[in-house]
Length: 381
Image (cartoon, rainbow, N blue to C red):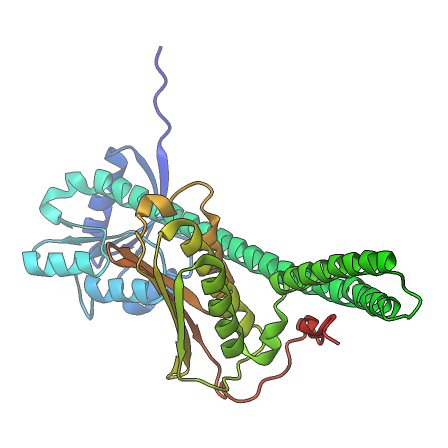
């Protein structure tokens, strides 16, 4: 014995001025296996009042005295209601029907073919339910992406704050102690009673302390470059010259901004982006020439890093653990910026763009995360 499938229950708002046509439409819906609860209205005022209730579908006659199906459709869409809307007419032109579909109607039927009313109604309702499900999934996905972006930005900020704190501790504790030890060793080596053997040991210890100081300065610069306290331009000039000395790759820096003052956070983001770009170039690009350009135009700070290396492919960016470029996008977003990347046979170009607030380019407040110390002074006395 087979069990009949459950019948679908619908609440139908029917805009129809003819009671006979209303009863005929309900008969076709019920003949199609639907359980229908319907309300008939035939004026604009009644229609608008009925829309305050919950309905599964609106079925509307095309021509209503003093009203029309198209105007009813405009009202439904203007109220932002996600309701399937089916037009029924004794006579409707193809152009009008197509325009109605473009305006949001789910379907249109001729009154002489109401046998299609039940399946058309079910199809329209299923389509709208699928649309609502997609919209809900899209909203949830957008919210998830927003939360992920906020988390990534928080992690970037936390990492930079922790690096700055560690750099200050290295400067205050390790750097200070090594500098004091260097002074003591220098004083001991100048004493008249110092024997040649002791002098040699002191010179060796002095060399060890000097190496330790150099290592401390290098670690300090990597954690939070003190050169940034001199401004972004000075920091990028120092970075390019250091990169060229270290790698042997020709690296030039150009800017039209000599005394550029930027909002807090922007210099560090620009510096880290340039640093990551140069690191990628030295590891992967096989380039012989690199150029860095810094400009400020129409309230947008632009940093461009280009090379003449081998470039990269989309597959390179899609690698599972290719986090460098992805991290640049997240880092740029922490200050409202973005990164554009292009690559070809003639090399790769990375452009960081950061829109600045009105008044940018004027002296900004100090970066609260910036170190007040200059580790380059360690051991130089």
